[in-house]
Length: 486
Image (cartoon, rainbow, N blue to C red; front, side, top):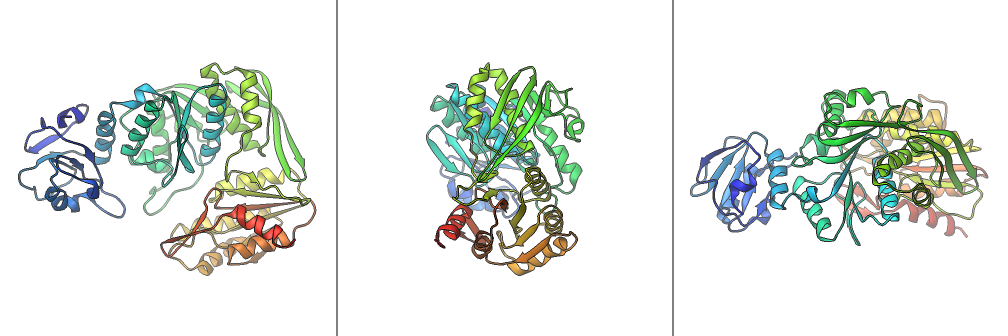
């Protein structure tokens, strides 16, 4: 492929050499450069591709794409651009022959609900015979191939490569989580989504190496609706109008409001030992009854969003009902089956908004006692710790403060910050640093009618300490705590 073909939709300056040269492959990781490669210099939080120019030249790179002043190497074509991340996205799309044009693409953005909604959409579509791929927080699914995720939204090259693999495997549709970081870093540039979805917006991902402030966070989310053909918006969210600022898409709405195009009514919470679910009636553009074995009004919205999307695929009401009835999402209000007369639930809630939503929702089921086990990640905002501690103390009867992923901080220091917030509320609390022991404490002291929520890690099966990931799965810890005593 010729370099100028990869650059065909972009503005650039050829500082030296010739843009009309053959290149063997497109690379943004200097370790993968070989003779004839075009290397795109990406500035990351940890490393800057511009620093590796001498290495890639020595390896035989034919061309280099830069976005800042450097000492120009000899005998190599050098392309100057303003934003190398954006350029990588467009070049990747061209390199893989624009695979998004051969798929129906669905992008989901929002502070919470992205993962559950994505799995619901995939489940409904596949239940009707539409082969559907998925790119998300937990994993990437390409037919029968499952790849554990490193980021919610991968780098643009990986996205386009994944799209191409999906096309090769006969997949017709892909649903992916569009994170604010991914949108901010142009990872989803180079193509237009067929559908964009907005679930909700709350205060999160603000701080070093993330978003400088809430406005920046909101603006990055809103980018999706200038990059999709049809936007489906949660009309109940207070930022719904803001997210649509300068949008270029056709807009449809969903929610509890009767002003929405599709809305939920007659919501009924279903609670029995070891089981929490919800049932409701779909009104508006579609009309039928739905029951899901996942608790909470927020999952009414998630499923309603999935229904609103699948309407465009002419999926029958019966197929929607069947698919939603059997949907389970790892680490998202996931009930752990135990013989006891209480309920244990694992959820990824790892910020103030998601924890408040989760605890408020479960409180509506009127448990005799609500127990919340959680910690906070190290090397992240301290504000999150204070807020989550206060929220748990206000909504849970007992808060068990423990360790999450301490990373390069001491677990006790993180717990101390959380307790500062906990003390602002009326709830009882204990601190147990070891997560295994914290979960065992809850199981050993469980009472009839309790709902025990183990929050923060969800689908994760590791604990990160001092740069090392050790195996740890909350599901295994729950079963070990219960069956180990019997």
